[in-house]
Every structure is written in structure tokens, then in C-alpha cells.
Length: 109
Length: 109
Length: 109
Length: 109
Image (cartoon, rainbow over all chains, first blue to last red; front, side, top):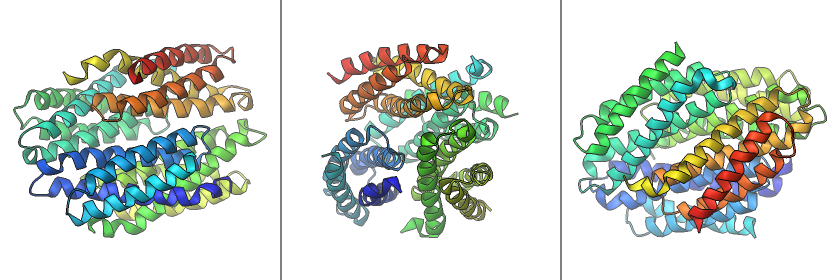
């Protein structure tokens, strides 16, 4: 399996993807949606780049380093947004984002 | 050009994609984001399926009929959500969605 | 967790996504790429719809049934293409596709 | 319209997307698919990042600069691959890629 070297990072991206998608859905159902607008936007950005990073690693893309570097940056920003909110889904999402940012940074290096 | 038969439908999908993405961004900046939560969700769904439909037509996917049929259904639902809101971006989005739904329905038939 | 009801189907889609992306990469490296052209195309179609199905389930999309139904159909077709080839990556991909088709069919019903 | 500043770059990305998707489909139908394997892979990478760049600009993503910078790099690489092949679809694709790389570089700066 060519992608074995990527396994840990793929796993971190998949967990971040799941957390961002759940947080996005939950934010849209909160009473104070306005307060969550930044979080909704970031969750979508982060889910989309995690999805691209997974594809890049699973297909042995020649751009895997650059894509993981961008993924790390967006995960970091999404984590910083989410951690400001007390909702359980935001706190869990922030943790998944920071773990994924670390994994992607390691991959890009 | 193999995709020539698809040109009108591709164009309708690209206009719907642009309208949904603009409406999504504008909804997240409205004062009453809560009222726009359904619209935000639909805009993302619709942009994602329009994007898939464009790819299907441009690559001569064997699933182009089924994908356009699903795109028509999602565009119709997004248009019905958007037309309930007076914001200019919602009204424009609704129009683009209904035009795209028609084009995709014709393609799927 | 709102998406708990979807867990088994999400897992099947993620395994199918991984198998399709690996098979796509491996097919492009085979000596006889021409023989794999149908497989390359199907792997891409299948990976893209699995990715959309995962997002639909994780975000509680109102279109989850329709998207899973389409995913089942594309997985079935990809599995039928892959199983014709003796390569290990094709056989593994076919199995993942048929499992995912079953899971998605159950979800759509 | 908030995205007006992005119009020229969005247009270049959409033309590159169309060219890459057409070239991908045509390459898979060539007699000598093996010779086109690099092109098939690059066309997919490039179409996917152009699609992400369009979404980033149309939704006013906070990561528009970084995404356009990555898009420029991938377009450049795809153009360099495509221009080596005499097929009309490859030559057209190379031109669209280089134009898009320029537009995205300008946007990222």
C-alpha cells in the first residue's frame, strides 16, 4: 500500500472532516446563529480542504506537501474560531482541527 | 468538442453556482442570520451539486443523467427556500436555481 | 451525536473512497493503462460521489436519501468494472464498492 | 456584487476547469493511454483546485490568496505536462492552464 506513510495524517483529516461537518450542522441549528456565522464559514472551509487533503494523500498527488500545508493553515484558523465558543460541538471541533493541523504540518515538512 | 450538447446546461449550472455562492456569503453577513439558516444550508448543497453536474457534463460521465436529475431536484428545493426571502441576493439566487432546475431536468430526460 | 444513525454507512463510504483512490493511483501506474481506462474513470466517479455522500450524512443534508441512492448506483457500476480486472487493487476496490453500494441502498430505502 | 474584483480570475479558472475536464475525458479515449497517464492525473488535480478556487472567490473565503497561490502552482505544472503532447485537447488545455496560472498569481499577490 503506497499510502501507508500517510495513514496517521489521513486519519486526522477524516476526524477533522467529521467534526467540522457535525459542528456546521449543529451551528445552523443553534438559537443564536449570528454568533456562529464565523464558525459556520470556517467549518465549511475546513471540511473542504480536509477532503482535498485526504484525496491528495490517497491518490499520491504530486502536490501533497503543498495541499497539506494549506490544510494545516486552514485547520489552525478553524480551530481558533471554534475554541471561542462554549458549545460542545465547537470545543470538539477545535480539538480535531488542532490535531489535524499538527499532522498536516508534519506531512508538509 | 464532445461536450457541446451540454453547453446550455453547463452554463445554467455555472450561473446557479455563482448565485448560490454569493447568496451563501451574503446570508452569513446579514443581521438576522437565524432567519437565513435554511438558505445558507441550501446554498451550500446546491453549489456542491451544481459543481458535480458541471464536472459530469464536462468529462462525459456515464452518470450524467442521474446527476443532472439530482441537481434539478436540489436546485428546485434551493429556489423554493430562497424565493421566500426579500433580499436581492436571495431573489437572484432563486431565479438562477429555477433556470438551472429546468435545464437539468431537460438534460436528465 | 446526530449522525450516529449514519455511522455504518459513513464507514462503508470512507472505505470505498480509500479503495477507489488507491485503485485510481495504481491503475495510472500499470503497464497497460489502456486496459484500465474504464477503471480509472469509474474510480474517480465513485470517489467523488462517496465523498459527497459522507458530507451529506455528516451534515444531516435534507437530500441524504437521494444522494445515497445515487452513490449506491455508482458504487455498483464501479464494482462491476473493477471486478473484471485481476489486479489486487481492483479486486479490493470491487469488494469495497459492493459493500458501500449495499450500505447506501439501505440508507436510501 | 462583492466578488466583482475577482471576475477575471474566476473566468480564467472556469475556462481552465472546462479545458482540464475535456482533456481528461479525451486522454482516456486516446489509443496510447499510457503516454497520457501523467496528463490524466494532472488534469484531475488541476480541475479540482480550479473548482476550489472558484468557490473561494465566489464565497469571499478568508483563504482566497493562499488557495489562488496553490491553484497557480498546480495550473503551471498541468500546463507544463499538457504542452508536451501534440493532441489538440492537450495544447488547448496547456494554454488555459497558463492563463489561469497568471490570473491566480495576480490574485494571490
